[in-house]
Length: 47
Image 1 (spheres, rainbow, N blue to C red):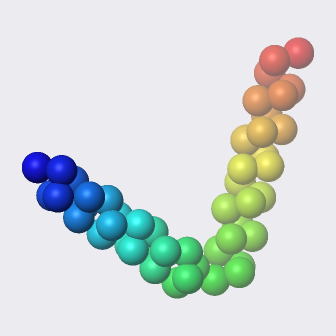
Image 2 (tube, rainbow, N blue to C red):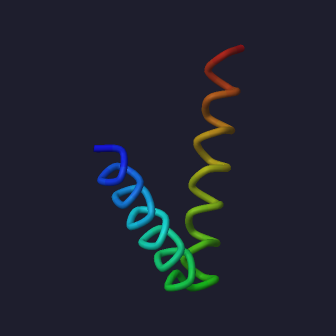
């Protein structure tokens, strides 16, 4: 069972690394701006 889990985890990490490499800089810019906007809105609603 532990072998199966470690195998799944390895596949997941491999897929995640592939996703990071496949993403363009422009896509990362969009993701970063969305995170910044969400953070800004969260800070405004807290006050």
